[in-house]
Image 1 (cartoon, one colour):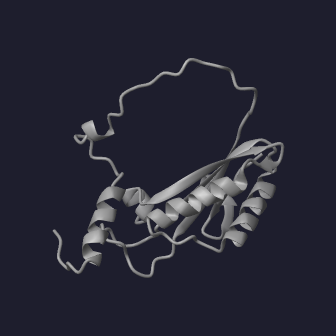
Image 2: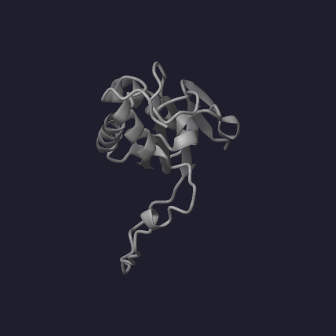
Image 3: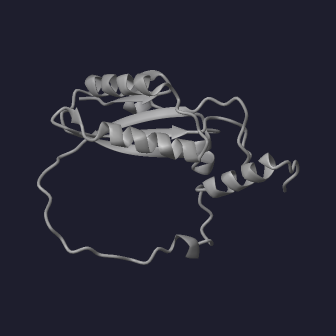
Length: 166
């Protein structure tokens, strides 16, 4: 069965779903995501996931792309169109498309993308936990696209009245 994706108001075949190359999620990782389990046709802890999505967006000062009630309806229609009973629903919201600059752009509509993938949910098997050191800050030598920290800093400085930052 072909999968359907949702991109900015349109349900499209998964293989042809796309966002603009200047989307800030692509350029800076300037966005957030949630993954909601669909178990036997029901979204697991839907309200909790939407609460966290909304909180994460608020922390990055990205508006919810549509009213929450509308988002819930879109998610349900998205699930219905994909005709899966057990799946992972991936929701990503970015600040939107704008010319590449760290500061928040004005008048930009957030990008909303949803994808779905079949999943098998079974009984959890007890395993030993494995921990590893967090090396993210030790690997500054890797030039990643995860620049959301720089986005937040530049916008914060500019909001305090400084108009020129290099």
